[in-house]
Each structure stands twice: as C-alpha cells, then as structure tokens.
Length: 496
Ligand code: MCA
Ligand code: AMP
Image (cartoon, helix red, strand yellow):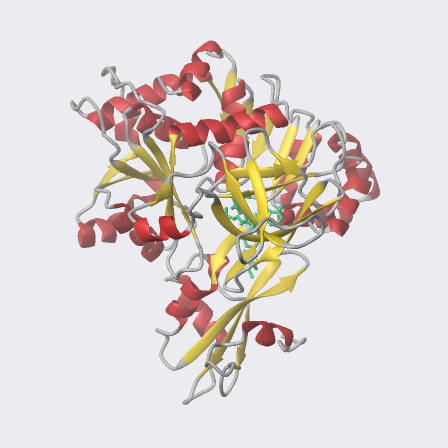
C-alpha cells in the first residue's frame, strides 16, 4: 500500500480534511478513495500507469480522486479549474489519456472536448459509488503524478514524479518544519502545483494533521480563519502575503489589533514559489510578530532550500539544503563557484523528478552528464546561506507565484489578426512579483489592448494574460536579429 494511505489507517478517526463546511476523517478519505480506485479499475486488476486527468476543485473529493488513482495504479494528472478549454485539451492530448474525471460543475464545459477528442468524461459521482474491489500492490518506483510546468519552450512540459519522489518531497518537509498530528493548515493554493499539493495538503495528511480547503483565495476569509485560532500553520506565495497586508492596513484599529494578536499564535508561516521581498517580510513581522520562513523549490525537485524552523531566518535568503537534498552552484563551465560568486543551482536527491513526460530529449538536457538537475536559477552562497539572484532565462516570468513562459504567450498572440510580431516580458511589480507586458507590432492598425485581452481569455488562463500592452513600429533586436528583451524591459514606458 502507498505509504501516505497506509499511514492514514493509523489516524482513522482524526479529521483529515475540512471541505465545503464539512469535516471528513481519515477513514472517510480511505473509504472514498477505495471506491474511486475500484470504480476506475472497473474489473481490471491494475491501471498500470494509465494517466487519469481530473478536473475537481480543491475539496475532499479532489483528494479522494488523487488517492483513488494512486491506489488503483494510475498516474494522477490534476487539471486546473481556472484553465480555458484549449489549455485543458493540451494536457489531455499530451498525456494521451482517455478519461477525464469531472466535477458536476465542469461537465458541460468539457462536452466539446468529448466531441472533438473522443475522450470519456467520468462524472465524479460515478466514481464515489460503493466499490470494494481488491487493489493492486504499488511499488515506490512507479510513476504517480504528472504536473505541467512552463519552461523555456513554448508549451508546458509534464513533470513526472514517482511514488518514491513524492514520499521524499513530503518526508523532508515533515522533518524540517516539524509537522505533527495536532497541526491544522488552511489550503488556499491551486491544486495543480507542488506548493498546494505537496507542501500543504500531503504534508498535513502524512502527519495525521488536518487540512481545510478554501477553494479560492479571499483575503477576508483567510484572515477570518487565522483569527479563529484553529490554524497552526499557513503557507502561501508572496503575492498572497502582500494582499493580506493590504487587507490588514485597510481594517479598523480594533480589527487590526485582533488580527495581529491571533496571527501571532500560529507556529509557522511559510513563503515560497517566488522571491519574498524583504519589505513584505518586515511588514508581516510587524503585523504578526512572526518571521516568515522563506524556502526555495521547483516542480521538478519539490523543495530544495529552506530557512531554519528553529534558528536563523535571514531576510532575502532561502537558507540551506533540506534533509536528503544535495545542492551545488556552478559556472558556465559546470565548475563549482566560490563563496560569494554567482552560479547556477544544480540539485540531486530522491525528491528530483523522473522525466518530462514523453520528452526524452528535454529530460536529457535537464541533467548534467554526472546526474545533477539543472534548475536554471542563479544564486549565491555567502555567510553560511544561499540567496536567489534570478533566473538565467528572460523568457520565464513569475507572476503571483505562477511560472509563465513568455514564448507560449507570444505564440498565441501572433495568431491575433493584425499582430505581425510581438515580445512578452516580465515587468517588476510590488504585488505580483512580475506583471506580464506585451509589446506588439502591427503594420496595419492600432491594436486595441482590451479586445486582445478579451480574445486571449478564451485561449489562455487569466494569470497568463498580459496586463500591459505597448505598440511599436518594430521590436528592438541585436546584431544577430534576436529581440533584446532586457532593453525592452528597461525602456518600458513608466505610465503603462
Ligand atoms: C490575476 N490577476 C493578475 C494576475 N492574476 N494580475 C496580474 N498578474 C497576475 N498574475 C488579476 C486578475 O485579472 C483580476 O483582475 C485580479 O487580479 C484578481 O484575479 P484573481 O484571479 O481573482 O486573483 P486572485 O484570486 O486574487 O489570485 C491571486 C493569487 C493567485 C491567489 C495570488 O495568483 C494564486 O493562487 N497564486 C498561487 C500560484 C501557485 O500556487 N504557485 C505555485 C507554483 P480583474 O479584476 O481586473 O480581472 S510554484 C511551485 O509549486 C513550486 C514548486 C514552489 O516553489 O512552490
Ligand atoms: P515552478 O516551476 O512553478 O515550480 O516554479 C519554480 C521556480 O520558482 C523556481 O525555479 C524559482 O525560479 C522560483 N522560486 C521558487 N521559490 C523561490 C524563492 N523562494 N525565491 C525566488 N524564486 C523562487
């Protein structure tokens, strides 16, 4: 039995999840995932790594489907509830799955996909029907999950992790951050990325703790949950802390005092997925008395570096390698750099992913000959700690904690009638980390930014839509004809 599920047996009567106002025990979760597994198997003995995509909002049912797929020997592929149909279709086709498990709210939305691709839509309710079929034994080396992440190629790549990878990603955090069964966490993050799936939900469930879902971020509801005194932990991206600070600042004096007092009682608050600006860390400390623990991770590796749980949390730094993680910083000749010199992070360890789904070339390129994963992040080690300095590619944008490929947006924009060429960049932004800017070239007319945004909404998720547009007669290029994006960023008009 998969260890996460095996451990759940010993927590049977404890609360595992709080979802849509209802409490569910570990036993409820085990029972529901047995039903899902049995119904997915539908008479077979093992799903044998069949990819099962599922479009289910963060909830008890989401977790039951994930566990059910694992228990039946399938690969869980969570789809994003915010994605438009073309983004969903891309994942469905890339994984070569033939089923999508769908929550009732998404069945009509998925109908055109069923027509076009012949894929079977399985209503979630069908999978939850009682089924006592016996389940296969799953070895740790088997593939367990595919998460899609943007990179330096236009289309997102499927990151494949095995059960062993997932277990290693969980165990290192449970140990480093001292998770215990008395813990309670609020999950406000999307469940198609590592941050929400592993750091929040799976660590809680591994530990016998409880995880409460808030399907969509809302500053007031988050503050209410914090102020209720029922949480011990909270984890989020820097943009969320920024939004929580704004909410606190606009509250009355009495409310501010109450929120500050109650939040100081949490045992740990973590920030990650993007650089935590030092002023946000400081402001949060002045409001709550807590120093945010900043850590560094990536879909391909889980978490790599973390500030200390007990010990120094240095602002602007990401600490040291987590247990089991080996990290090095190298120069362009792949030689380890000296202390105080910038280098690229490379990582080894049991949490590192197995492969990009059906992309052997990309997988090979992602590792050095001696087996280190090349992260593409630049950092430095000094005075006993690591610091992130940036990324080696201007084509990767981080906005609101989401990783976004500029090339993917450019490919879509070029299909808009009247756009002859374009360049997409990440512009620094206090709240979002970066905000997406698009510079468009049109030989014929003035491009109406609002009309373009509207058109893009049917093709890309909201967080990939440029917020700023400029139109130019041509794009700045170097002598080799390559667009000079850094120049474009530097000269971006201040009033746009
Ligand atoms: C939304 N808006 C944006 C963006 N997203 N504006 C600029 N940049 C953006 N990225 C706009 C919307 O168009 C809308 O404007 C308004 O902001 C509110 O939109 P909404 O979608 O309601 O935003 P939100 O719900 O407030 O979402 C903000 C959020 C969300 C909660 C910070 O972006 C989020 O959940 N981010 C977390 C992503 C995450 O989990 N990343 C982890 C991956 P208007 O009203 O004008 O339309 S990284 C990872 O897993 C690795 C391993 C790691 O290290 O953790
Ligand atoms: P993703 O591929 O969505 O998993 O995003 C991973 C990327 O987020 C990393 O490669 C980093 O560029 C960035 N990242 C994660 N945590 C941090 C952090 N604490 N500081 C700076 N960048 C971070």
